[in-house]
Amino acid sequence: MIHKPPVFVIAPPRAGGGVVAAALVDHFGCELNSQSPEQSGGGLHWSPELGLRVRELATEQSNSHFIIVLREPAPTIASLMLAWTSQGFGIDRKLPGWWGDPWAFGVIPAWEELIGKPVVEVCAGQWSGYLTMIFDDLDGIDSDRWIVTSYERLTAQPQVELDRLGAWLESERVTSQSDLRLSPGTLTPPKAGKWRRQAGEIAPALEKHSAVVARLAEFRDRYAPLPLAVDVEAVDVAPVARKVTRPSAGTVFSSQHTNTFPELLAKMGASMIVSTYKSGHVITLRADSAGKLNTEFMSHRRPMGIARAGSRLAIGTETSVINFSNTSSMSNQLEPANVNDAVFTTRSVINTGDIAIHEMAYAGEELWLVNTRFSCLCTLDMNYSFEPRWRPSWITSLAAEDRCHLNGLAIRDGRPRYVTALAQTDNPQGWRDMKGVGGVIVDIDSDEVLASGLSMPHSPRWHENAIWFLESGRGSLSRLDMTTGAIDTKATVPGFSRGLAFIGPYALIGLSQVRESVFSDLPVTQSKDERNCGIWMVDTRSGQTVGFVKFEGIVQEIFDLQVLPDTRWPTFINEPSLLTASSFVLSQVGLAQIAGDRTIRE
Image (tube, rainbow, N blue to C red; front, side, top):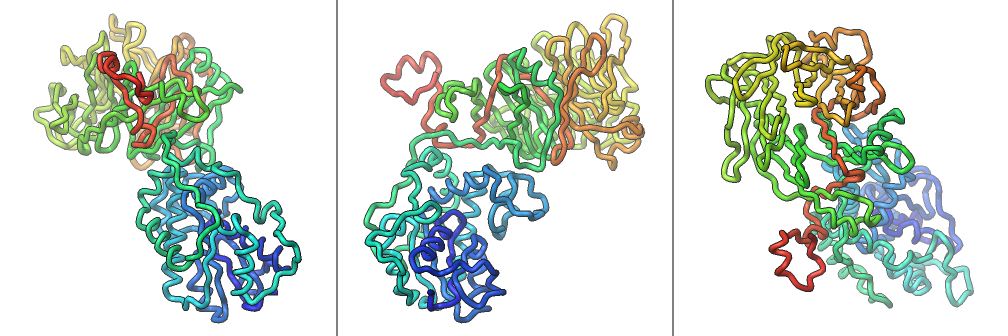
């Protein structure tokens, strides 16, 4: 029997509040009140969401008392991560704009700032939000109405700590056992150090909440001065992988695919990377051992063009180009070890400003960009936003006016050779009046217009001695014969076609559902046929669709796609982490001068 009704056990999720409540029930023979605090006038109450209501409960129920449960940050966040990824703790709440794993536990203020963040940052933010609200609320409540304990103290000395809480609650324990029995779900301590494998991932996420960590330490020192019988385990900062890519499971996203799609990737030992533009994601597509398609997400702001050459990979975003390099030797430090045959780590970020980067391609050692806003092709320089290298003959001067909507780039014989534009116009946004009928393909070397009157051409590619391209406004794949100048429409696909790659005789075509407000007068939008978002696999010999992967949910537009040959299972490390901080990539000349440092990666 608890003599201070009602009593609320307050803790951030996974910090041990449920353990304390269950231990009190076992120790004192009381009952855990299942009714809401508003419906019940007394008893012991516990729920993770009570941590967001301390001030409200203290005000509405003036005789209420609170047991505050603390736990070390890193193990708490590790436990939160496990709960989030298990998807067994999701709540049925429609959070506008939320697309990540189903939200678990209470919704903190400023939850919108966590949209699109890796699960470790979501959990660290949720932990920080809970503690901030608890501490702020306690500042306005008389200290004689609450007492502080800790998960570590309770599991180290359960009988001593429960007797201390019982004295404050004016309760007597009902057991005569000399040692309290540790039963599953109550005081069974977790396996020591089981959270350590995630410590390197958690540590940098916690750095963003250093003020709350400091506040926790100060609060604990002030209100929980009793020493522990055992030392609290310190945060391990040994270098382990920090995964910032997100699996598709749990997002507002689903996909359907034919068996032929992962079969083709598996047969060719390849994978794919796809930029989704409006949804702000880059998706890696991989074939797993069960013959299914595996998707992994990486968040970027307006990702569009993707370029790959050897170990280098670049992604164009809203205001920058992010350059990655394959550091495959890191694979043995990721979990599970030695599964990833490519580990792309960030090498540099070059800020371009909002030049509306469209397609990109490597020509030898140089990365070329379609600079749509300035109607030109450009390269990059560390000292400048961009270096103009070529513009169409009808563009009289460079201006940030998107005069012709230059968008696509094809490499031939190692040099930029062909581009696509939506119109031959030289006035600001002039292409919009001709977007469905004024498209052109241009030879960069001669400034010759090779094809005109096209409906929004995109994605030119030099393949099998011809220019292949997508006529997006018609949802078609076409081939331009360089000898005769004839255009042969090879296939029509059910969507706005943009993004093109080849694996052998198969064309992989990105499809978008298309925005009606922008493209309402195009043939593809006037058709009554279903419009899809995904990737269609077309046999170029017959023009038949032989497979597809269809995206639903948050992903509605595809911009670019690239095949990663000889790369079955790539992954990305997109932000600085303890793993990248302790791994060094050197040339053979540099490596020869290093002795005895096992952190060096070739």
